[in-house]
Length: 224
Image (tube, rainbow, N blue to C red; front, side):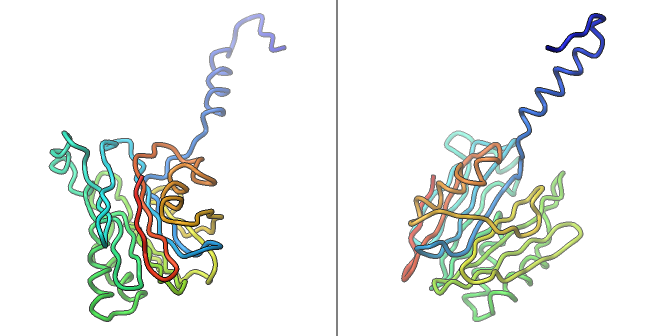
């Protein structure tokens, strides 16, 4: 039993215990990609403290992150909160946390290699010029299982090819280098749900919306 006859430091003790129990991790925007036991995927999750009123809209060959109804004016407060998060270009799925999704996709469509499309797009667009110097993250996976993941921060640029048959994730805060991860999904809906609140991703706070592309011989899209 904790005994403190003079009541010294009692408040400090309580604060430490509460902080320890609430030791959750905020990663901001997160993407994951690679190959599960049954298919290839890219997945994306919006986690946000400042602009939680957003949703994912799924179309035939893309998924867009947009403000929810009634919050459309938020784009005038922050130009970085609305964008295509996934684009499908033939056998390739492109995923990112901003307008560079389209830039990477367009370069791939023009015939540029995946690595060069990602590196050039991240370098030219650079990190977001907001209050946090938010990094741009991106990834591309093909139906044959080739996956690339990358990030540009205010001090670094990384584009890596994953080992075939593996999965990895990266985020705008904290986890700013690619990290391998276990990913359980058999279709696009499960892939979108997994990054939202399953497995390792259940440890990360402030989930808002998520989306994924999953495929073996063709891409299917889904959003949460």
